[in-house]
Length: 251
Image (tube, rainbow, N blue to C red; front, top):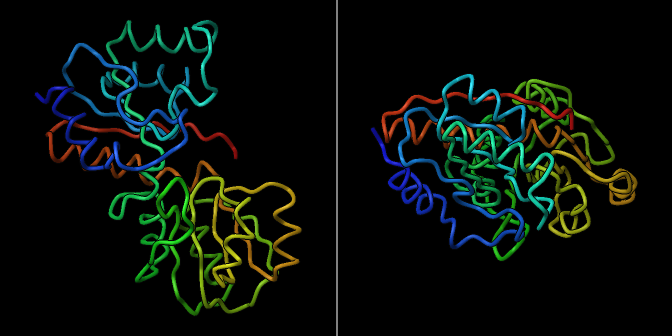
């Protein structure tokens, strides 16, 4: 049986938790400890009452998430936060959160896994955020319609398309999550097709002005890859079963 300390220490090193910059409220790493043992690993995009309740049903005692408990910032322990903490404490669930370190990991990260799912080759880092490249750029000649079909298959859902760029791609920029507001910085990299999860309203106008294809696959849908791959990796290394808890947000 793997110990919590052993798994956390390894995961911190594997994801470079202490080296990768992020927003303060991400609070990457172990957010809640349990009594010290890990028998069943769970993975989810977000922590919530619904996710924790499902983890309890499945006897999960180590839960990996992409978006942790503290995104709203400093807050009193009442309401939803009190409920979530109580569920974790009473059921001995450890919570581990990894945001940008999981997005950008070159093997199991959200960006790398989505590129792989699309069948694209030779991605290069681009778009600096918090001191490191937050996305990947791929030089590829693809019909726009073919790329959209590949993306919908990879995400198992629809893609919102603003087709203001060329019908045949030359340079594709990919940043999972909510990177649509970076569209001007993306355009500065001579990218003609930008794939991300979600964008503000004005980004659709900007896409037309810039002559860029903007493909929005959904924040949740573009970020299921990393937590699954990390859980599978830890499961193999520490010989503990794992499961994915699917709680889509619709965004």
